[in-house]
Length: 140
Image (cartoon, helix red, strand yellow):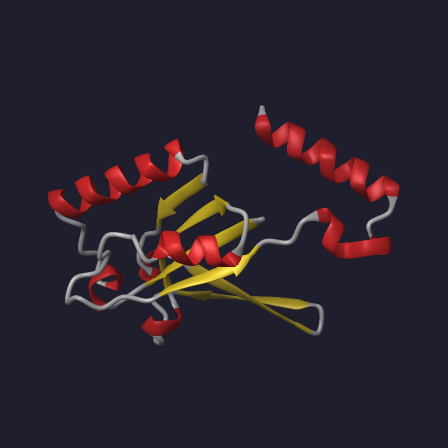
């Protein structure tokens, strides 16, 4: 099972404040543990929403909205993708994440990633072949 681990933003990450050396060291060591355990697939920090944009779609039209975005609690500061046996295992790993945010409070969301099998009969042999071809191209 693959899960996306979503680190929620706070006022400090949205202000563009960078982590200090201790947090970078702690996170680096934690990522080493994840890699050694065969859990971590990928992970990155994200720039503040002031450097981002959203594209809103309605009635066949698209509209670009530049950041920053008002609701900090709805924004992301970073993510991991982990390969684990269960949601419970992902939760246990998340409990070990070094305190990522200044001010001593953080929220991390855990979301399972769909696999081809989850789509049932809608995932035709042709679509499976296309998906496998795309994954192979991304791996190169």
